[in-house]
Length: 347
Image (cartoon, rainbow, N blue to C red; front, top):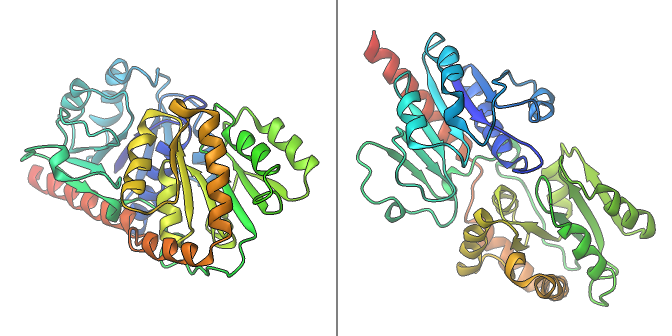
């Protein structure tokens, strides 16, 4: 059994659960059983939609150490396997305890060095071994080769069209600052972007949905999508993507959609900066530090990219060299091997 500990809600969005669902799908293809453990019921719609087994711990997702007693009753007496956690709140003590029951792994975005885990996965573009120093007891799975994308992103065809007409806008699970709405309001007034068509993906916990729907009713070139199950197809239909930092950037890279990106929470900033430093995005800005100035420049760069097909072609080629879509498969193999090796050692 592979146990995956992850949460989703309005505060933290859906990214933790979504990327772990990709890993779960790859594990199931190998014949492994996978069960998600969640603090509360907020993530259940995502899990139920994908027919994923789960157990609700009825704990506080911000205090993982407080759930250790409950976790022990689930793991210690259950099937041996592997325990993978994806949470910014887990601690050294949490993994020391969990590691007594089975091998443990961690999905990391922050470069945390102190966690006693058997496997650490950081698929971000900035992830290098120097980030962690000497880790002789931890296997590191680093860089975009381990980006855990769904299987349908593998070798997805994409065409850079001579004339840009469609922009995909995605801001994550919650979009607390209504950046999609703020961007649209500016883009629909700018001469270089006002005639483009906008496909806006509204996350499961977006509290600004009504504001977006108001814009949709007022403008025939705006369409809002919720509960999206055809994300790859939306990307393939788009000439440009405007996206918040996060896993979506690696999906866009696998397809090859020219992108502009921004950050509005701390854990997104290093991803956006990494893409910007490597020339993989035309624009990378931080809303927390620049506010309206960032949004204005984002619209200007969208207009520039829309008008330049050669630039879009160059961006697409560079992005497709970053991610090949096999990251979840690579992670699943390591977790499968480690769960089997511990089980064999105990026989």
